[in-house]
Image 1 (cartoon, rainbow, N blue to C red):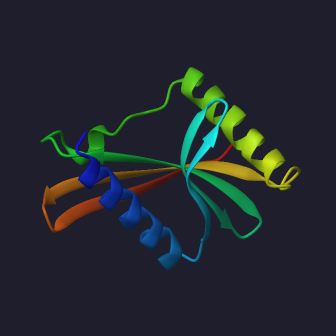
Image 2 (image 1 turned 90 degrees about the vertical axis):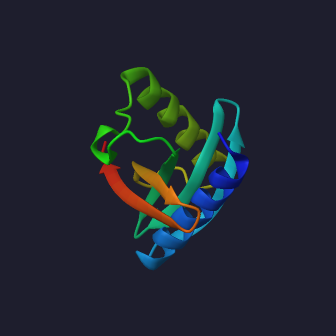
Amino acid sequence: MNGDYDARGKKAAVAYLVRKGMTVLDVDYKTSNGKIAIVAIDGEEVVHVTVKIHVDRIPMDNFHIPTKKEDALRELQIKEYMKDCELSGRPYRFDFINIRVLTDDRALLSHHTKRR
């Protein structure tokens, strides 16, 4: 993956979430179970956001669907984050942002929410 696309994609995802009214708390937060791309607050919910950047020609509707193992890992990550940041007990959810790079200055973004 081109690091430039990754950094620009996360920056675009953060800007999108802020426009949607969320407060972004952390980007690339490291847990003992891996990294969380973005952590945000939406109302009362803590949101674990996974960002995928696509630079190939696969259609947008073929985005990655998380496995049960990946869901379990995200669950561990967000619980560790919430404990570390004294947010335990708050509701949380998992969001997925897919960014399809079209050209150096154009991309399509899709946002999916997975409630627990």
